[in-house]
Length: 457
RNA sequence: GGCUGCGUAGCAAAAUGGUUAUGCAGUGGCCUGCAAAGCCAUCUACUCCAGUUCGAUUCUGGACGCAGCCUCCA
Image 1 (cartoon, rainbow, N blue to C red):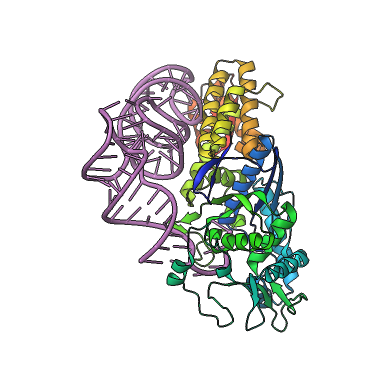
Image 2: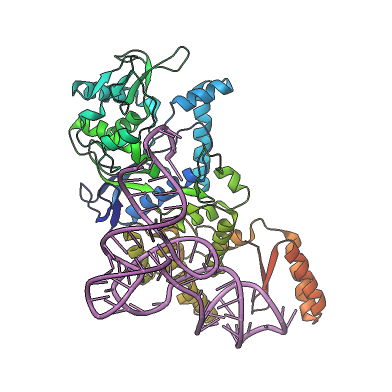
């Protein structure tokens, strides 16, 4: 039985889809004005893993992840670059998809864009005004009136009085309450704009997600995810908007992933301590990045450092080493390991424990290989690949993971060393091995007289 | 100031009211010409103080420390 930690109740709860066998999941995606950093990668990988496991568990899943392709930062960046905002967003959407593919993140079923959802957004704002929850401010912008929504603060555990006591927002005279947030923003000259009943303008950020999620998944759906920082105000505002507009419960389960940290600090654009995915990919294989993310629980903080990535690489190498020499086969899957794996994942997607099952599997596989128990080895290897697949890892050929690009010179050196060994010329054999080691090539003699090699992790 | 969450061995990271996490590193062994890889064994834990309990790393309360949110942020 799958249990998921629900931010709304701050408890792990048995997961009950609204409709038996079907799940609707919405995740807040990127605002596309720059390259994805490792924090974004975490969201993509975490919810991709959730999606994979829900499907494995037999649910018919509709996974929606939006793209915010219009907002202040996009407009600002496009102006800086002297390009049309569509040109900017298209470029970064392509880059994002490239990063995703690298990280084995499967595309969501639906990827709505804010700019393509303007009619839905306008309709929802009209409903909110009609319901007395929104008003036109002194500057022509449309605002949501947080006082009018009784449960405001339910998700983030805040109440309006506390928020007001500590609020750091500049007083905006156009608003009735400083905590009111904008639904429709009037365009300044030269800014991208869409016609609306309130004049030319663009949607506020929060309303986009309400409109897109409702539109794709209905008024009430199962799972809504995103980063911790979106809890307040973004998700709180989504609830206020959607429930205010439809009168129905918006979402059953709220999932929030923890941050990536650098030196115990949140990785973020404003702190400037971020690493883009493509930057890290220059030094590390994409699968190592994915594995690194899976190595901690999705709600825990994840400390980013080269040491951590190196360690992840070493650990992943161990799994691939176990798979070495065993081609993908249609061998039976070992159900005991599968059920241990499922048990771990059923417990709020506990990937660290699921991975520990893979390591135990790898040990048993190594033992079977040493004992030359080929049937057992084939079964365990097939199981390891299968379970790895549920996490989006271990789908490469072991040799190509361990060796990378083939290199003829290495083969020749190995051959020369085998000759030297036959002649019991240990000095020469060791010299060849040391020379390759200096190039990051590790030689490993196999009992049958051959020698394999791999690159240092 | 208000609200969350966290504090586990050398490092990373889980679970758990009494029993092996797991990976890396260390130590001893097997294997090897020697290595590497692999296997076996093994050493390092639960921030502190009270309380509940036959028993607490695990539950409760407090202290200290850390991170996050309360402004855009995944």
